[in-house]
Image (cartoon, rainbow, N blue to C red; front, side):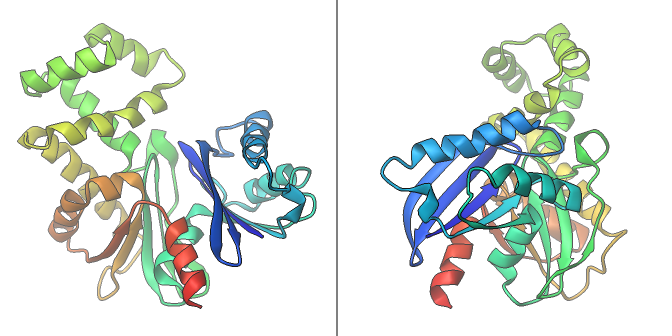
Length: 281
């Protein structure tokens, strides 16, 4: 059996294959070695192990892990080390979440790749490896086009009193906040990244308001603008994965067109595409 894992900051998805047929699917909390300690990471793998029930974990021959925060050799090695005691009979390989999208959408063809989820990242894939990569600065200094970035833009407009009353009323009711509460969440609480990251789901229900559409389009335009420093944009299309890009795909294409970029395909997550590629080969 072969296990594919796709882990982002928000959730981890496990798909177990037997002769390219899916026999077990499990979703649990996310992993990012930049932010999570060893105890948290190990607990995620143990939750998967507990979900197996009648399936023996020692029968898993190969484990392929794709994860946020695994672009560095240090983080990849750390994830590998934490997996070894749990998947002791398996051949384990650890890749970045960017490589998952490369394998899902490009296979052996060159292309530009982006992840627009809770965070954001991008690279140029030459058909075999990640040949160029823009620095990923995280939610404090970068992550343009991500859910966290979009949430920050919304909060800026909220605190400047530039949003429609209906949106403000619903936001304050749903999130149980007032203006002073928001200042507290942003500047005093430790989980402000999570707070920002929850806001895009709220925005989905208010796309009829031009102010909300502008926040989303501007967030994506900021992403494309940031890429111009690192890549040539001509002739090669972008392939994009991630919940934010997927749920706001229409506005993402608007932003790409405004910015002079071409977008080929947008998917929510890469694992199903990777499985399809396995089945075709």
